[in-house]
Image (cartoon, rainbow, N blue to C red; front, side, top):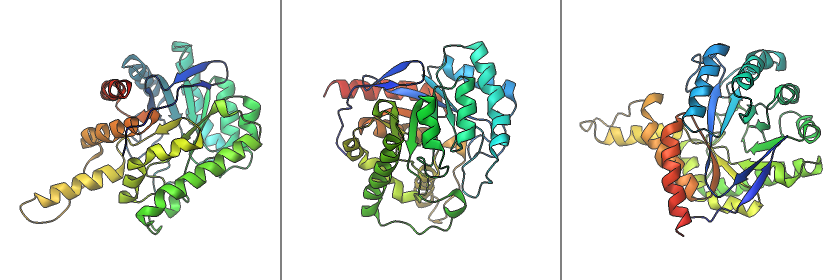
Length: 304
């Protein structure tokens, strides 16, 4: 991996714009779900969710990404109404507390996107890259919001049984998939200035398939769009830590499961690598450590 000079650009959102490239923006994760892999159930109640979002903003988050449906492997899809019932009270209450907050709605459903943007969200973060709801691209064009298009291979119900990709095929597959999503967005009338791309670490990429993607993240900059990277607490990091632990476990060779709460140092390492490889935005659960890591990575990039 070579350090990448991030192009500077302006991300046009619904009613404002954000500068990208000069420093890394921190997107805090807010899962309003009972079953997310990392923090399911902790912020399901609106009051708890709002307080956590305020804490992340106070710690330095630039954006808050609010999701109402878990996309962990094997998760059960929600109806759009169920999703809205979870997220809309949080969006509305948070904007009453902090009217200037930049909020993103993490959804692949057009109806939820419309409702959330109407409630004040500035960004639609679609983990399917406009692949799962045929109305999403046109909805985002009409809403004139910011958009994050993620690459996803298959559906959550398929991830546990998907064959692993040969390592050399990972980056070309992600690049072609993101190019297709980008083309769909532009054809629907979404301006390039509104679009950020996300390679989708862990989304249909099994464990070691994520490392070629991280090592060659800079190659995705050739698509001409800013990049967002979300590696926080991901299972591929835990797998590597487990393997290290197994080698030192008295020769037993048995890999212990690494709890989510013990993945912080690995998250910071991978997040820093992503920034140095060209990510303009990082999506994280633990905001303050990410702010500090990003400041160091940004200082390195500014010295190139």
